[in-house]
Image 1 (tube, rainbow, N blue to C red):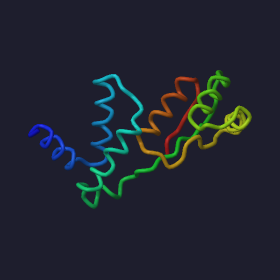
Image 2: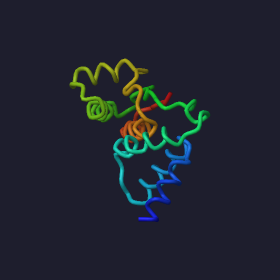
Image 3: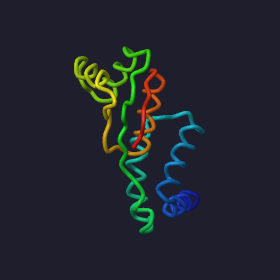
Amino acid sequence: MSKINEIIEAVKGLTVLELAELVKAFEEEFGVSAAAPVAVAAAPVAGAGAAAPAEEEQTEFDVILSAAGEKKVNVIKVVRELTGLGLKESKDLVDGAPKPVKEKVSKEEAEAAKAKLVEAGATVEIK
């Protein structure tokens, strides 16, 4: 158990950005994704051990679809998957770009959504 306690103490001392890098490193190392559960588990730890300057960092991000690109149908499918919207609503969102696809999400969730949309051929911004 001492190794686990050492790891927990080390994580408590990390900034929010360092935690995001840690999550990304775990994803790459172990070939996993779906960072949302990890972010939920890590958020209380960050709040408990974070100093005042770390709390000023941006914690909520918006995923903005800038352009659908040439593969609009694929982008509509990804938008439906990410948002749970119906086909017509997803098509309207894609046709009306630039539009937000996800708002006030964690950095990990925003990065994951951006990766899916870019893979489908869209141009995406995170704000």
